[in-house]
Image (cartoon, rainbow, N blue to C red; front, side, top):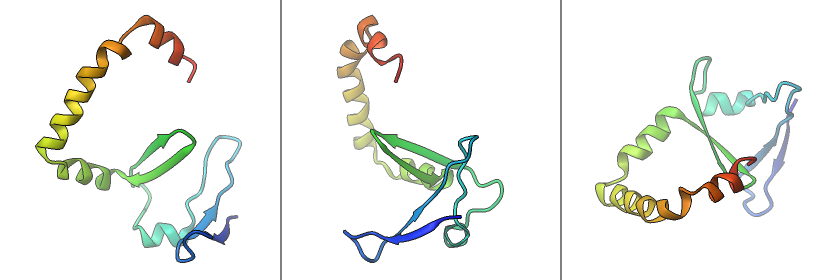
Amino acid sequence: MTESLISKPELTNPMDILNVSSKGQIVIPEHLRKKLNIRKGTRLVLLTKKDTMVLTKETDAERALQRMDKEDLGWLFLNEQALAKDWDTKEEDEAWKDL
């Protein structure tokens, strides 16, 4: 069972509180499944950043990537190349191995 709360910062954004099962599973509330057209077999992408998780439909994530223009992709590539010398080290691998 889920509880619905209203987000104080944005009173127009309802918030659902979900319980996690012993197997780590959650249930997406029916009203959201209907609203977002999520059905059995719908593939979702889980994005994480620090303590935040965002679920999005795989098709929506793919569309967002396709909309990125070549300049954005070029900057991402250059950033990755520039940081590779700092990231691709044994020390970095050791520091991040348990995260």
